[in-house]
Length: 158
Image (cartoon, rainbow, N blue to C red; front, side, top):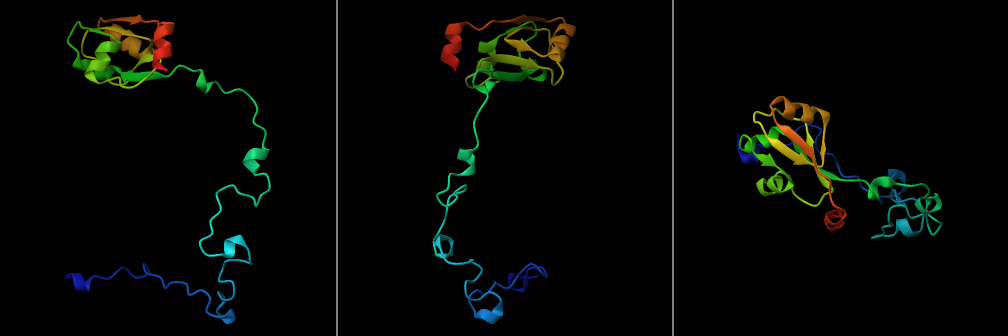
């Protein structure tokens, strides 16, 4: 097989639709563009949601109610299995997690989740723990401590 012998699979190539080839072709006159007007012209494009000057649907619908996402606490999640990179008996806090690269970016705190297995005895200080993470840390003889974030630090991080 050579490059000049290669062909596309049967049925993969289609003839291009020949528009504007007379009325009897089925694609003549307006060539599939409908009637006259803005969309019939070449180079025309109307933004999504535009309704010809009528107030668009997304502006007609009332926007009511309260959304709590702006005020919720966003935690950086760290899995229990990732804590194995610390030494046995080490104290793991937010600063230690950030220096190792397990917690990056701005957040309202650190939450330890229960994915993975822990093989070391650690003292873990975080803002929140899942139930399974708490059980796994304490099963290895480690301790957990819930840290409260100060209001000043919270304002700086968000």
